[in-house]
Image 1 (cartoon, helix red, strand yellow):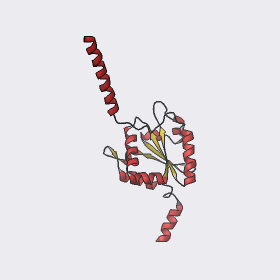
Image 2 (cartoon, helix red, strand yellow):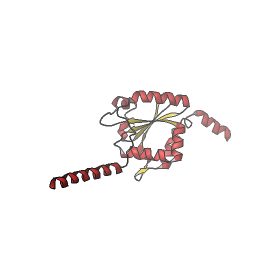
Image 3 (cartoon, rainbow, N blue to C red):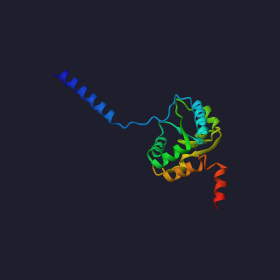
Image 4 (cartoon, rainbow, N blue to C red):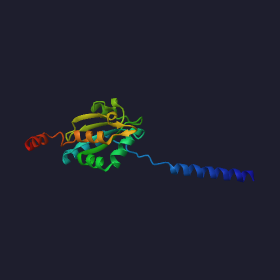
Length: 172
């Protein structure tokens, strides 16, 4: 009888553990430690050039709560998401103990010095235009929609196109 009770207890604990595991929210896997970041950046630059956009590198890791919070904001807020996707080719570049992408980050001017996430904007030729410390975009326990939109608007290809300013001057 004790043996039967012991087996039933083990089964009940296993079921409880599985139910708790299933109840945990799924953490998105935005960053791929196995990805070839250099090749992915090259492809993103090529796409950006063809689409007259800039590249937005979001550097961080799946371990980084601020990285996940930023992604949550820009994917769930329709206005930010539309602006981001209309103006940038977006690529998540991994930094984690498994793969620090040291060579790639060295080529980008060591953006990790600002912590994570950190954003690097490249033009359609692959030239680094800007490195953004995400701390300046934070507000409370997340990121400010207004500050993120200002960042996006300030570093879009259109904002950096001299023709935009000639047109503004003509309109005056």
